Image (cartoon, rainbow, N blue to C red):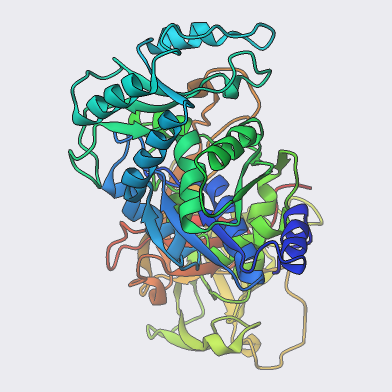
Length: 544
């Protein structure tokens, strides 16, 4: 699916046509302090797809200017996620690669009288900044001389001062109606080991300073970000202008994408993991890319979903059903259709006298013969879904098995229930049925119409299996209640059942359609001979 027309495409096309840029260069700049989620996928796909459309390139640049929260494990996870989505960055770089160049440009601002070292604490800076309706007040250190500022900034770098003791601030306008322009901090002191530079630095640039400069260093033409940075754009341009970078990038903002009943906050996701509400960042109920991958989502489905939501200048919310529909559309023709019974009810075919198992040749997917064929077992002892039987036909719409009714077992024969064996407590222990050997699937039999079509698993060749069934993790997505009160207690149910023999050695990540059940993927914790399957998505949308 190609990206539809949008305002950023229009800007890019005009920039190329009028010669303002020769090549489209974008970047994806994640902080390596968390796992990426479906919201990040929008930024990834938007940047890579737009650059690709115009023969340009996209860099992966890790915004690692806050070493306290960053870790190399996140770096590796982000690289894996981008590769899994199908993209290859032109360059993989780190913001820390530019620490020296950024430092020298900060020195340039000091020499131009546009930056000063400030001794105010973070709380004092916030107080001096003012409000949306009141102008800020100048720091008492704003009038330091260029020489004094150069000396103090050099000593900041050498490690002479403690964390928070001093900052470097841009000297702009404390009365600006845009609070971001009221002498923002551009360097702070942090005595901690950095994942990439070790202990080489103890001062780190703030995002608003580092971001435009790094874009300039890399030749980024269109710096795409979310709407909360609209008010930061004037500061972005101020740094580019006054640092006199050779290349001039431009920032453009687009709306965030929210999905109903889906947590789209790194802070909340971390809270769920740290509190043990979920099993980890790859919990199949989470919208993290590692979680979606484990659940069985495909990169093609995620790309289709993101591109189908479009791109605009406003934040938008779409139903989670859109994402699920993209997955169904992707999987329907590319995975095999197999049999699994999650709540087994034993069935004995009383007139099937042979103890031999009959192996039927069946297509793995009738809509895609390239997926080949397999052997499906049929015999005297079977399992069907307990919900597929009723003692008495409930209504005229019942298209399953009942006493005296005849149904077709898919790929096999017609069977009729003749007797129900019960346990002492009255629950059903076993069904005793007869079959018609003349009704084998593919034989051309057209004598009568069955009361439905059921899947089954032959008992002697069945493999025990675990099925992880999921519902939305959140009960609601717009409530003001605490997060822990909004968690669905039934979001993960474990069902033990059986699967056909061909699934006994399914490998982690293998995907299937279980006939009449839904789409499933083999979990990473699955063991040979005892497969574990994650429900990826139901066969049909829950929305009526």
